[in-house]
Length: 212
Image (cartoon, rainbow, N blue to C red; front, side):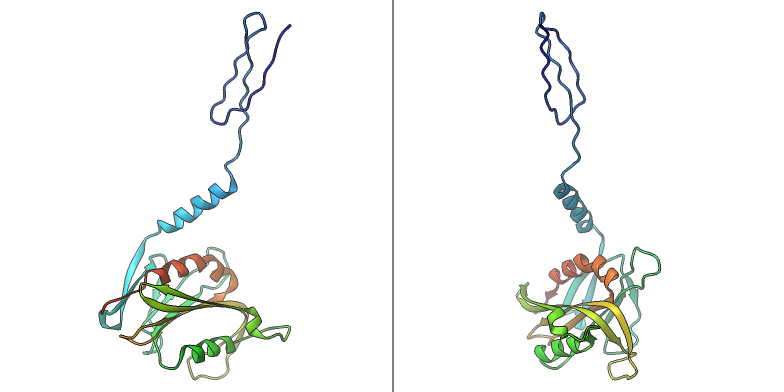
């Protein structure tokens, strides 16, 4: 009688046939695709390897690492210390706008102002479409906010006639410091663009450092 044994082999394509008289066995490889978790980790590792550039603000007292792929822009207003335009990898989708500045007022007041720049098509409360988080990073308290909805995009801080941008998203971070005051990182744009740069934005926030 001839005996056939089938075994799963993960790495090589090997087939050996041996008859019953000589004790031969058939081993057949069955290839398997890499687990999705491994693929996701590889993508995360690739993002982590992206080149960054150092950005120094507050007369050298505050610095962080921004993705080198983000286009640096000339701020339109003096109160903005640094500005970037993270682009979408898809065609016909606008880039995001990231502004960084120091500003007065309380953290809560500024968070409310950001939330107030959004409305919802169904008339619901924008706070229901907002996520807030508080973190400690390099000894500083950082308030992170994530808002979705229709954004009232105005030409400047006190300009009227805002353009209503549907399907927008904002990622913001307020950095509390006792040395240079509060710093505001605000990235907003089409949801697709912000989704694409969310991990980069959060990685950037983790690099913020303060020199005493």
